[in-house]
Image 1 (cartoon, rainbow, N blue to C red):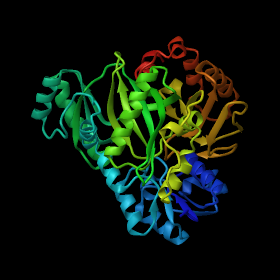
Image 2 (cartoon, rainbow, N blue to C red):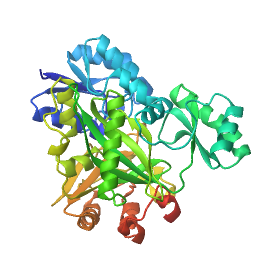
Image 3 (cartoon, rainbow, N blue to C red):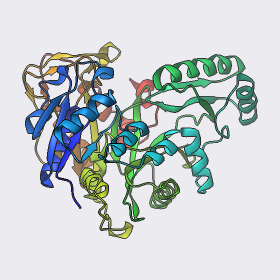
Length: 446
């Protein structure tokens, strides 16, 4: 089977990305939008648009009844949730299914399983994949947290089981900071995710963050599409991603890919997803979590693997087999993605919403630009500050960096501040050029 009409329950560049993939497959699209997003570019390309409420996310993109009403009014067969918002919300997936609307993503049962980080870690251990030393599941009390921390040794991380984006996360280096961090992480997790459960992990100091893209169908085929190095982060938010990782050799790359598939198979995973790992100074890698959705940085993988991940998600949700196996995938060249945010790096990354003046995107050989903005577009203050993603692809890493420098310099975005000046400085830094970075690189160096 194939879909005739799909709704995208998201906004911005990912909504436009899904609209484009649907158009190529001959699928009609319905785009939802908040009142603050009336000018977004994806609305111009969708076949139908439905307003779902005012600007605040809680009254629009996070309001499940409004989204379901829009889907029923527009008579769609399936919903693609994009990333963020409700993309990993098992309840939303269940509601879609109960309304006879196909969910374009993994099953609700899988989302629940891997969405609880403590359960995901237990699953990985059972599958024979090494995890960071830590608690066996949720830590219910302060006393239990102290006992575990003393056993595995400080420093430790206190992490929300439903966490993400650095929320519900604290680092403790002694008993006092552990007690304070334990309660602070629980409060923040409860406020952010309505779930105050936390677990403990040994802190891997100065690690690299490397994730593996997986894609599976409902017929038992699951493959990995290589890794992405996401070590360049600011406050646990990714900024620049690349594939392949400069830190991995061929043997480590093979082992990490196989480990990702083991975890995915243990979770009965289908659709697109990401298995994330930390890599320590001794080149040892540890499973940390699964993201049961498409990632912001998926174009990096598309560039080096040649696989259209959004198309894959649509076809898998329609019940089609992948049509290829692990040995069929060929990786070519090197790709880097830069997340261009409306933020001022010189002012502690202060958001810079407002009306764009002249906007000129980059172009040329080896350049892809994914964005929903244009000259005169008004950037809302309600949402993530991402205004576009620059993806560059070349025959090797140094060539990709050269294209990145050139493309960043081509972007014109008048009247707002962006993260482009920071990226230009990073591309000139000796440690980045040599591939010698870790998750603390930006905060140490800039």
